[in-house]
Image 1 (cartoon, each protein chain N blue to C red):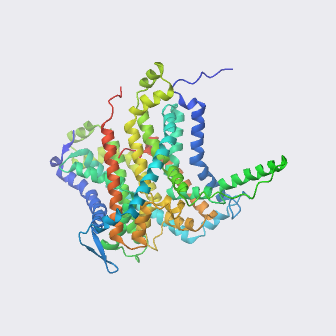
Image 2 (image 1 turned 60 degrees about the vertical axis):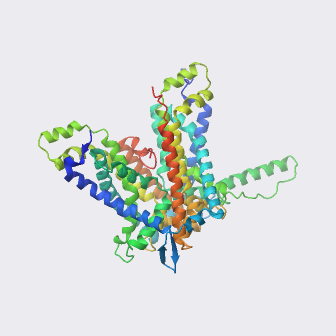
Image 3 (image 1 turned 120 degrees about the horizontal axis):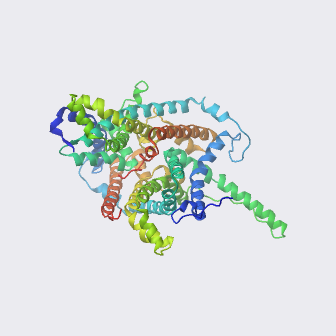
Length: 302
Length: 284
């Protein structure tokens, strides 16, 4: 099938040289430099001496920062779980929809995910802020309720207190779910679409209910797809910068915000480098777990 | 009157709880965006209550030189990085599809890295690289001063293009290549006349993907942009930090419409599979 590179050295070299050089110079090299900096220390204002110290990593896993890592993982995990719960029925419905409806539904899921992340986050700010649409709707209900209470002779309700929906952890999780939902639905759909429908029909025919079919047949068969959806949602959510930055409050910092601060404001590059590599290692672990899960694909495609 | 048959066992879409769920998810995904677009036409600065239709904010937008410059920067960067990404991605895909060579697995893995690595880590790496190794002169004439951002964008876009092109090449019939060779075409001639035409649709899809990725990117750009090289998302970010204003709504609407148009073109050219090709739609 594939040709040995020796059979067409000129073509091979011509096609390989440019992408390989680009990858090495403009991706691998910057990464290696950051990695080297993570073993260094600041000397003076701009000099960084790479002294092979593990001090930065020790600081990165000290309680203060470990807590931020744990919190980021928790927020990303919660986001992933919510996306799975919200997205699974959607993927299921798309899978078994008629062809025309399927195309439209896929398009509807994909459009927001092609829309700029910043714009989607901004749209949420407009919805959630104290004078935003949610609070406006609540205020309207509140006034209606007050009028109703006065009508039946109850004590009038007090002035409306807008809910603080923005700049807290709730807003961060909501924002992350909002942004990452399509990431979950698409791989789920891809996995469910490959299922052998006769297995589901057999299960239903043999008397299992929908819920039982779902849990005992669909979920085990779609497990690799679920794993890949979980990974594709979890990784960007773990490293999210924009959402906690714009929607979060002072206590909803995630790891990416801490890394940004080390590089842009605190000017402690070696420490920032160590933090960013800890995040990278966590990402690789997540990828490895998914690879292991995907290998154990049940051979039941029929 | 014809009555519809009751929903079949697997016709989930025709059951009302499922429809309710889908509607709720749809509202969750679309209501904020639709509100954002609608209120860009609202004749009120407070921007919550509908006061009347106006195009004032679009007018302001087109006279806001800083925003226009940022928009021009973004489009220029996207165009340049698309051209480079498509060329590099196609070459990488060709090598990985066609040849057996030592280190192939390593190259394959290395190409997946820019897709997998968290954006913040890559942004930081680019910041360090352009600060220490290759300081990009800030006073170069436009558009050369955008070079650092273009390089960063190519680095994260071209592996996506390679994925799309390689998927397309899987359906190539190798007998065509053999036929070309039998008829006397050399290696390069075969590529130009037989392989490239087969690749073409995926090149277009890859180009649209690279363009959107570049236009969308905030985090990596944020770390490579200087004070004179502000892109549209970076500009919007500074406006958003400040407050929610109708101008930002109008600017966002312009970008959303542009994205929808690009997606529509991609779908027309490639069928629905094109739109799932990017952004983690495939398995890493």
